[in-house]
Length: 59
Image (cartoon, rainbow, N blue to C red; front, side, top):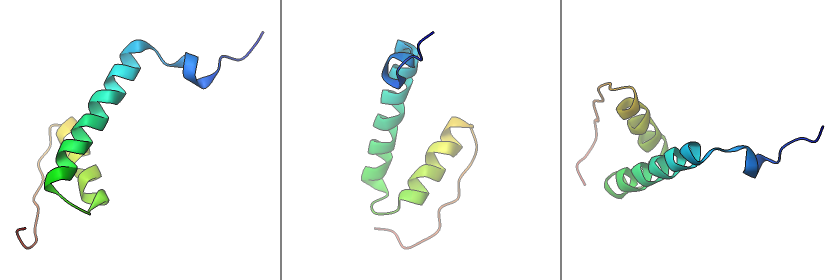
């Protein structure tokens, strides 16, 4: 039996979810510039329906 290639192993729903997640990250990164860890934390909090307190100097 042959192994499926990684590209063919993803379902269309998984690819759609991936594209939506990348679009969400891109939009958040427009507001939080240069802080990739903060952007990741915000995405995780949004997906978990949690809360985030951002501290720092306003841009």
